[in-house]
Length: 94
Image 1 (cartoon, rainbow, N blue to C red):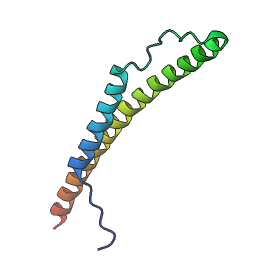
Image 2 (image 1 turned 120 degrees about the vertical axis):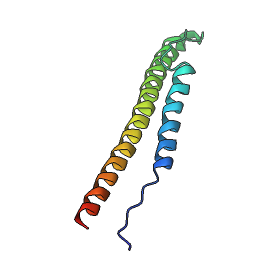
Image 3 (image 1 turned 90 degrees about the horizontal axis):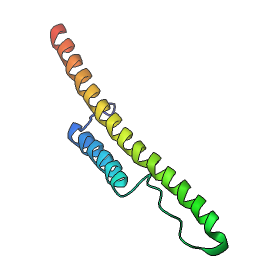
Image 4 (image 1 turned 180 degrees about the vertical axis):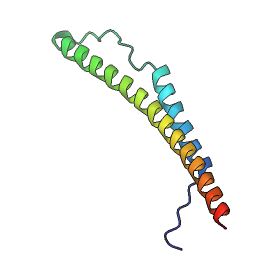
């Protein structure tokens, strides 16, 4: 049947784990930690602002990766639960 849906729960959990670990690695690498701007002469304020924006963005990315990993995991658990429940309902009818 072409309309059959198959979900690989092990693969979903692997994707979830990779997303969460990537977020944690980014956070551990210094996401959100503002460092002193390099001495760039007259351009120092520009570099300071650029570094501040990069720091803020990397913090958001780290959080987003972790959140996406959690959502993928939750989706896999929901799918497994619903699939099991649907299978039980079908068995009851037969």
